[in-house]
Length: 485
Image (tube, rainbow, N blue to C red; front, side, top):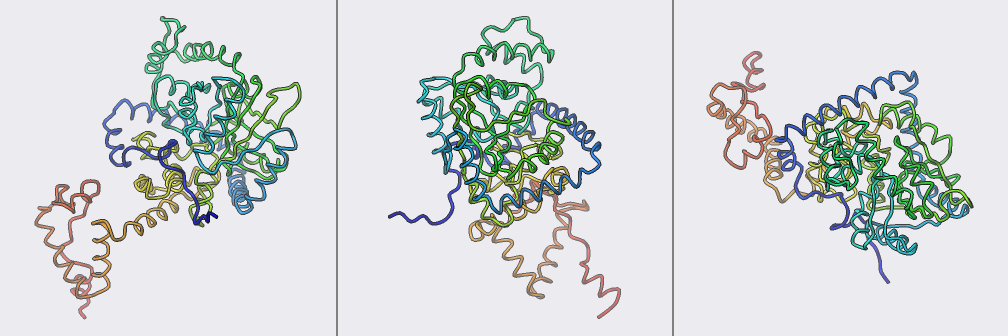
């Protein structure tokens, strides 16, 4: 008999939730890339302006936002019941539901299902969940080619790159760079191809059309699932999703268990919040909805893979669970001053930006992504634009505290803070520390901040932070001078 204690997080060695470097190291590399910063600055400012314009048109935006937040809280409180209801409805409509505890199980399930069809290739709708678990890599290892059909995902795939944005995975590439990728990787592309957006889109359309027409299996994610009816929803802007969801014989959907909404009335709220917050549109050009299998219409075999991969562990955290409310709009990325300068690759996870800084550490366990909660200025801009009012700054502080507690006895910083706490609790030690700190004025040589090149271990702090020069007298000394005592 096996007794399981605790809740599993996303397994190591599979998927795209952990980076090869801590965020500070990866960020330093990104900051040296002037073209990257220029691409990001232009793209994020454009998306911000579009979002602000369409959100400003909605007189009850604040009420919609509050409704979305309340619906997410209520759904997470009864997630187990809603998941069972979803399974029952999908099964009743001819679909098959599979439960995957982690990335390994999900990849095994999907690979087995594709092999059962006899196909050696699949077309894919853009999906964060399949990127999270590294499904493309797992399929490739099994001899199955996965063709991304979203334009930005196609650019990333052909460029042998990784996504750097939730909504616009190729945001770090400009038109000239995309043209070079197409000329290099598309066998039938016109060598006279220009970097004009329409020409690039037409080249991608021609490249993908034959894949759509011959594909027997498609793999998708899901933006939402309606528990009451077993309905899945995918929203997109290009029509590639509609092609994948209707033409193939077999459709496999991989969905994080948090994507549920209980009823159609609930879906109505999110279909107003999502397009305005993501693409700056009043509604998505393509909203595809399906439930199970319909004889003679669309795929005749449907499989739904419900993915945990650390979500239950996240749900157990009373503060951190709010990250599961995310509807993947990417609004927080587009206003974040840190993301705008470093891009998504520095985060080392398929979920970059502010939401990635709180979601990835919880899915993997905080210590596996310990630097991400610090990848923020805590300015609060992410909370202001979040369509479901996720308090990302508070979660960041919460996760930082978890990391500090985990490292309590092992780091110089932790030892320093323990010594500081002891000094602050003892008046004699505190006054002595203040006098000793006053010697720092000699090092500062009249400047408002201490020099960055202090000796270790202080250099680790001053390398990335300004340390103010100690004042000539402390508050206590000034008070005694003015008032006596």
